[in-house]
Image (cartoon, rainbow, N blue to C red; front, top):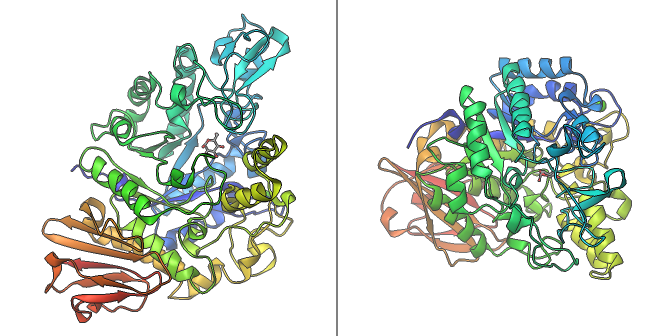
Length: 563
Ligand code: GLC
Ligand code: CA
């Protein structure tokens, strides 16, 4: 297998709005990030993925960009950006930018021009269609509720927006669109950035004719079968690779909703013609159910193992995995597959971290995950900020599809705002995030969960992450070893074995609060292992003492190396 620095790296995602506010306006900003780079250095991460910091009217918190070469005024200036970039580089930390090019803001000058007239030179930068019998051109619903089409009186046509109506989709079939995007990417690369995380990149190529999709509960048709991994997506990404990516030494990851192992082998093939890796969604969608996302269902461990293992073995030697439990679009994994009750919070956060970080792939840590931050205890609708939750609540309750009580429960459990509450730095006012009023409420548990205390305490979740990240640098088996799932039918334990050049690494995770008996696999019986990491107090040879059978305590995890 080829060695690459991005395979050996750990990425940390910053959602700038919620990370650190330097000027008291309640909104995180670039100077706030610069001030916390030493913290990230201490944690030991290699790369920062920065969620969008470009100029934006913030309909979708920066994922609606009105100028790709300007910094959002609330976040600071280009000088602030440059200072952050050079300080990060001084510390040996790379910066990966979010690239949002499936759509722009409707306030982007391209769209402002485009909507002016049918013969405007920017008209074909977007996807305009005539209505059908006075209605939308097709039945697609948007991700944020309602139709995916918006009627524009000026020219009596509709434009396509797979997300909000302030996020019109770019028309990638137009070579000028591709050229403009590639120019903009080159401009950032010349500035010295180190990579791109590509927002919903699997959606950029739409099936010609834009056929209706199967009708869902909300009364709209799905667009995924015509847009996800569309007919020309690989051609476009190969062109992007030739024109831009191949000219620089970058880390690239594509956010690919609807991606399968087979498709991922094209996006992230080791031949390097497109991207380094993708974010797949199969593990996140396990509790999606028929209601897509809005429910309060539990993920079965056997199902999670099946999916994770399929990706681990499916891509082995052919492409590369990204590893994540959390990001700005997902509720906190600790409140989903772990246990956020104070009694088990830290131990289960460490267990989840062990389970993920000992796999093959590039791990992503989402801000606050390294502290064991949890979902927010919502009590009223006005605590929500995210258009996805707000629109879904309105649409599904008004149509009588879900009761208001149930829907409140669902958005509280699954809503994206869970991940977007301010980073908990200390136990002072507003958790040290801001001296003003934060744009979204701080989780009241900041008195117990905060960085300052965890940095000082050796047994903290923070120190545990630090160790996991360090171990990855010390043991090649963690980066490059093969993966084999053991005990696939256990609903309690996630156990797997990594192998590399004669070494074995046994990873055991108890996903329950109960004690579960565990038998050391036959092939390792009688061998002495070294406990690399444990969220209890197993010492170096803790497994040997345990003999053939050991008890895994509540949420216990350990990784044991056999040389
Ligand atoms: C991606 C982003 C999400 C955003 C959407 C539209 O899924 O991660 O936050 O709302 O794309 O840009
Ligand atoms: Ca600020």
